[in-house]
Length: 472
Image (cartoon, rainbow, N blue to C red; front, side, top):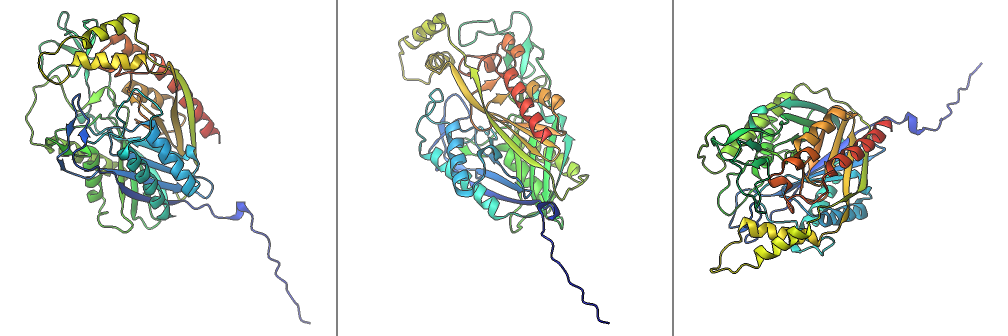
């Protein structure tokens, strides 16, 4: 007897398909032409030299269900209109949902402005460099997506406390200088002077944590590392130099440590600016030192990269993780100058000038006060949250104080978690309500544009968004 066996092909369902993570990364050059104003200080100077190129550093992730892209730009900041233009281009050209494109700037103080000519006007047409930045961000995301390939992912944290210092200090009674508004009512001073006899104590904590998300090929070839550290910038560049500051030097050093030089596709390291609105690299309790250009920057970059490299060695990689993104418009009020402040600003600007000279700090803040008088009374600002496996990322479009970042980490449903400052736009400094009561540079009208309760409202909204992502 002969038996005939028939094989019946059963339909393959989505549940039967293996879950595969893919990742791709790319660099997109943002370097401006020489001659544009370097805007790190109150008086921009024309650029005369490119010390190192500026980039948009792009990472794309695709788990078969959701696709995300993360971009870190070597810029002081960019206006919301720049990021919105880049988002439209990416969505049109790749189909990526706008909520899944997460963009931020490092806050290097040695770059040409992508903020536009007047930061106090919104919805203005993009200038030539802003259009260039938006286009190059979109190109970088497309190139990262072109490089998508099977990958595995993991995360880790390290600690580097030696390079972060709170820059807002209480001073001894009677030593507070007059601020640009003619007042000595500030209770703290930003950058008060090295080893000054008037110093009392720092006005807040620091966050020494380095957060890392690492992506490799299944065989272990590095694809990208996204890092986050709450340090404002380092500085110490040559006069008139364009530079991406220590952020780029960290990326270069980490690439060396990982043995990832000259790969194809290229390895991409990314260092985002965390919540560093009141944090810098200066220990004001000690006398200063005179360093050669870029020397301090290289030291910081090497130390942070060494801690990151050590932390990366202990990562347990996953072949697949859930991904998700949320982008929300949060309505907040803005700072409103009083009639008295407006009158004083007009009086300051109306004083005769005997000789041509740069504007004084008093005049600069008089102009900013009048700018805020014309600013909208309420704004809808973009805030964002991403889920990458067990990691929670948040984006705030301001120079965010470290207390806000620490609160988000403590209350976050994801561990680890971290915040990119200056994400998806730029609306000045974001002090907490407690710091508003202390005064100081970061709270001055025009330096700070959003209402005093803005940080509280932002934290509440971001935690809601993270909770929804966790629930999914």
